[in-house]
Length: 476
Ligand SMILES: Cc1ncc(COP(=O)(O)O)c(C=O)c1O
Image (cartoon, rainbow, N blue to C red; front, side, top):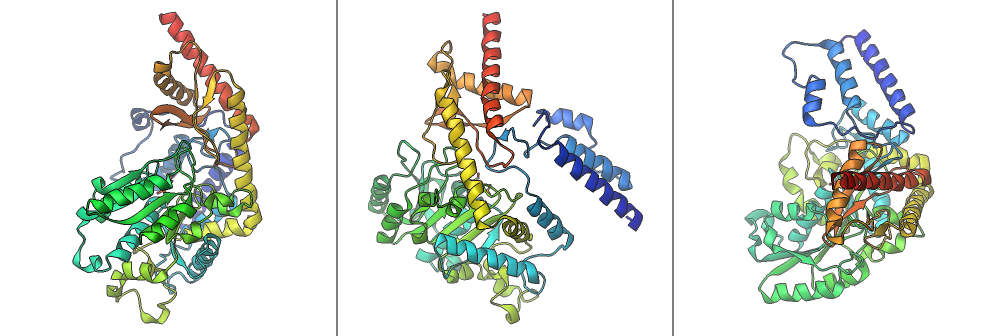
């Protein structure tokens, strides 16, 4: 592309970005639920044999935005991420502009120092004053690294001799994220050696059940080497009791990893930090800044109390003579990462943090949780809606229960209701299960959401429910 075309493309890009942001608050549709066939038909997906030049690029840009959902809309409450952060957006663009990889200080001097400053601060917040950490590809990967460190702590030779997971066990909450199963699979622990510890009525891992399961596993000749507790479960937003769990972990010599992918930001808030009391007693933690903190995907940190263990499990890098040299041994992030090439995900978080500071993060967390509280109150007042779980965080699990729908049909009714909401496209919420029942699970993780959009969501549910019921009456 010549210079004039680059200029033209940048101008077009800026026009797109401005237009997108202008629409943010007032787009009528969050999604128009396209089908794969529709996308195939209405755009040219197949990479061309002959160059299309800038025209092809511009058309591709248009198509991409045309078919994208509006996760920045105030009516997007589907996922544990969303919204738009201008400072972080700038950081993302600059990271790509100053294209580099994070393995060495030499290649990423400023970004390395930024990442270390963030890790240091987040370690302090968690209570690992001498800890270390690194940005990963997400909470799933953070859970994997935590489990790997746990494995190393009990079987340091496994790294060299291999690992037979048949007699191992890992203990996770019954409501943990599926990535812990993936991590167990990758590490050779085996899915049948994952012990799903029972939760209480509010979705928190029960310490008495944990203790019991550890005993059962040991009596069966298994070695439990890792407990994964969750701070902010995916569906209910529950926080496992870390103080009690850490006491059990220490007494039994088991590694404790805390999956704080969703809930880690509670630590900013004086009002909510106590949800994570005891996190300083853990051995490792993962925390997604791309969730509650609203940094663009991906931005996730893995933190460890004893840096040496992370260094050892990542010491394959010793063989990378073409990359890592002794000169900057203590600063090269490549020595404590499972990745080789790695994006600069730190800059966007750092710029956003500079803009709003700890106090701004605290306000954000508190306002999100307060909005979730508002939604909960509206649901409780509504005669045809019911909360399906206790709420402490920004997840609200509820369902519609119109009088005319028999209780055994409520799962199907709420599933159809959610499909209709998606088809109308004005709102997006996810569908989940709580105790085997279908629920709608709006979450507040998007700074666009306000009281009006929450009330609007419930109106939308009501309208869709009425339409479904009317349809049934007509058919009946
Ligand atoms: C509790 C929890 N842990 C881990 C993850 C995985 O995080 P990521 O999508 O960043 O891999 C999620 C994702 O939603 C989650 O809710």
